[in-house]
Amino acid sequence: MKTASTANPVRISWLREQGLRLDAAPYLSGAFAAKQLLKRLPETTPLRLLTRDSEGIFHAGRPLRRWVTAPEHGVRFFSSTDIMEADFSNLPLISKESVSLNPRLLIRSGWSLITRSGNVGRIAYARPDIDGYACSEHVMRVEPDSDRVPPGYLNTFLRSRFGVPIITSHAYGAIIQHIEPHHIEDLPVPRFGADVEGRIHDLVEAAALLRGDFQSGVEEATRDLFTAAGLEDLLDLRWHERPRDLGFTERRLTPMTLRALNYQPRAREIVRRLSAVDHALLGDICKDGQLSRGLRFTRVDGAADPRISYQLVGQRQAFWLRPEGRWVSKSKTSDAVLAQSETILVAARGTLGENEVYGRPIFVSGSWVKKAFSEDFLRIRAGGAEISGAYLFALLRSEPVFRVLRSMSTGGKQQDINIGLCAGIPVPLLTVSDRKRIEETVRTAYRKRDEADAKEDEALDLLEKKVAEHAGGDCS
Image 1 (cartoon, rainbow, N blue to C red):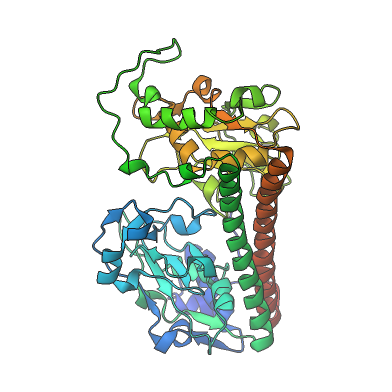
Image 2: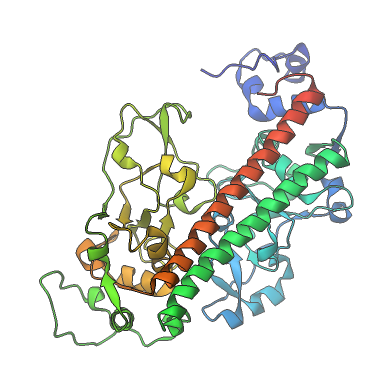
């Protein structure tokens, strides 16, 4: 049952605004309560007045989309889902010609990005390392005037529990929900003075820089591994520029599989190159660890409280900065759904679309060891101290190994990864010092990601405390 907060009770003025309606729905709406609470603050400013020339809320409009595969001819492109992801290494490339025809596709550092179609109201902050990337018309841009409001502070308010409900309340449409810039231009933004707003902005900017360090760290670890192994040319794979796998002959068939995809010449060439250096097989490395699918289990919903429930993360949201998975009861769920630190989880069920997560890995560390994961992941955990999970992740996140994993698919419409074939992936064995350096790069990157989460949470907490202080009570 949902009840009104005693700190922000329904008032007679609310009843008058709603035509003296006595049903509960309008008064329990998060948007209505947020608007009423913001009215109690001593100073607010309409959102449009805090943007560039008071016209800084816009979207790109429908662009001419021409996709390319060569980085020199394209610009990294965010979909409305991509803005929520943690690792931007695998974004598609839209042609520079398309961008020149519609420069509004480009985004700049410090902007707030709001999904405006479908799942309305998801919000991200454009960090410095993505300045100049392109973004879908399904994402609204809020370009702040930094002379009027610190960009990080504005973003924190928009993604807070005061901003999001008001934004989403303006969505319209029957099947696919939408919002337009004019729907949110009058959103009241609370003002707390330069000191408070500056502190919140600094936390958000520090988090953005840490996320950029995370991105460059995991990319550097992969680059370091392939370079040290003498395989750096594989990093510029240009998969789609290689001859297609048509009309080939395979005479070394095994009882493991008769599927042509599993003998794909382009993928077999990558395996051959990995096998040409000193290596161990993935199956041998994981012999005393884990190389298997996750646990299939009955979902019993629980309260959104980490003391009594696990947050269940599926394949799509596992790649997000902040997964929004459902919560399942701990008492009704085996702890086998958890993943140990430095386990690699590969999205192991899906289709072969270029922008699908199928075949992509994530790395479990920090607070993620407390999350539950669906059975759809292939779990990879090293069995000894010689090869660490961090080192394996630097290899498995690479484009060459992604293509190898996809070549090991089995199934019809929904693909699965053949674990028997996966066990035969060669893992280059570098010197101890090289391995230590690479694994520490990965671990440092993930520590910075966790630190960025903490700074964003601190910024939100500070905002909520100031709202409560100026509104005259608890805002929970």
